[in-house]
Amino acid sequence: MNETIGYFHKGTKELTNLAIEEATKAFESWRFVPAEERAELLFKAAEIARRRRFEINAYMILEAGKNYIEADADTAEAIDFLEFYAHEMLRYNEPQPITPVEGEKNELIYIPLGVGVIIPPWNFPFAILVGMSSAAIVTGNTIVLKPSSETPMMGQLYYEIMKEAGVPDGVLNFLPGSGGEVGDTMVGHPKTRFITFTGSMAVGIHINELAAKVQPGQIWLKRVVAEMGGKDSIVVDHETDVDEAVKGVVAAAFGFQGQKCSACSRAIVDEKIYDEFVEKVKKAVDDIKIGKAEENYRMGPVVSASAEKSILEYIEIGKNEGRLINGGSKTEGNGFYINPTVFADIDPMARISQEEIFGPVLAIIKSKNFDESIKIANNTIYGLTGAVYSNNREKLNLAKKHLLIGNLYFNRKCTGALVGGHPFGGFNMSGTDSKAGGRDYLLLFLQAKLMSEKIS
Image 1 (cartoon, rainbow, N blue to C red):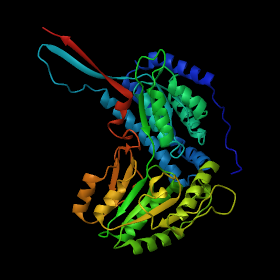
Image 2 (tube, rainbow, N blue to C red):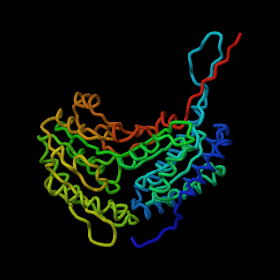
Image 3 (tube, helix red, strand yellow):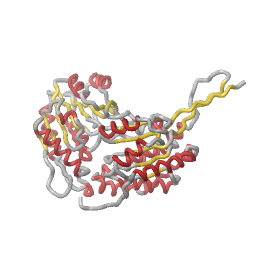
Image 4 (tube, rainbow, N blue to C red):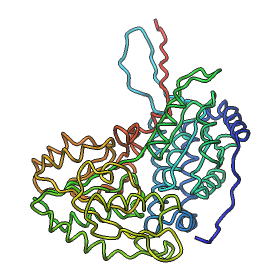
């Protein structure tokens, strides 16, 4: 809490406008660089990130409060993004299949959009930042990157890696600053073509509204790619291995202090095994050790004083909405440490069941049967991740049909999406279902151009 690991300038409106102008100028040449060269840039960046892996981890541990395991997974995911999107760009650069038309030679190609704004979060401070930024760059766009104010060092490291890999001046513009001044200026600028954002629902809605307003001199409708959080449930059927379900729920609820949009914040449990489940969760959570992230404790601090304040306020709300099983307070000592907290007997419409807390707080809800569990799981405004523990195939098939969730898992935890294997993005107020790390993602940064020539 008392250690300074870096100093960063704070951007202004003037610097923001300058960065967008530089990106606009660079776009005129970068968009014509062959896709193979842009992909090679990302391959080189991946190799550099591998070489600097432990350094990136160390900064992340100190800056974001991730333990070594979480930090290393974050860095590894960033490397996966670099390589996956490079390969995907090569795929999109291949001849695209279209229906032949007699007497014509037709060709469909994908071209970049223009200048983009990248606004990543602090909770996956390297992986998401790298993924969003690199996808935009490899597709031929130029960007202004505004890192989270909580984790600017991750943006600095990415900038250094990309410069070493050979990114030309103006293609990647790194600009720390406040959301109100720098962020709004970037989003509202008439030369901004797209905005890619990951963060809270409130900020995502604000960005969408601001981007939708056509500014003087603007000649396009801006594209918004938004990931905005979740209120994720794990449904626990009575026909399951309760111990495995407990293990999955606790891991998904308290990994990185619950500061994941994919974290399990609600366990919806069949009444036939409810008491057993609650008892086993209590024991598992009591065994969680809390301490410094750099000493690789399972749980470290939450990211900031404001986060701590908000989480503790929700814990007080929870004390009036259910039965406190674990935690319920901050820990002693210097830093933003909160005991892992579990509430049982929560009403499905209670505030801690409906509102995103983004911290180490789990609500356990009792359901009468599997059908009711599915209804409860669908009762929020979000639709990001979720999981179902059941050994009954018919019930799993029912969940596949009726759960409105972008990333739905069975008999495993609802966190830990892998690039390529688990394209990530959710429905409703969880965002625009971007499916980051999937085969559709690069299309968000491209537009299709059809060329048709009459032939004799």
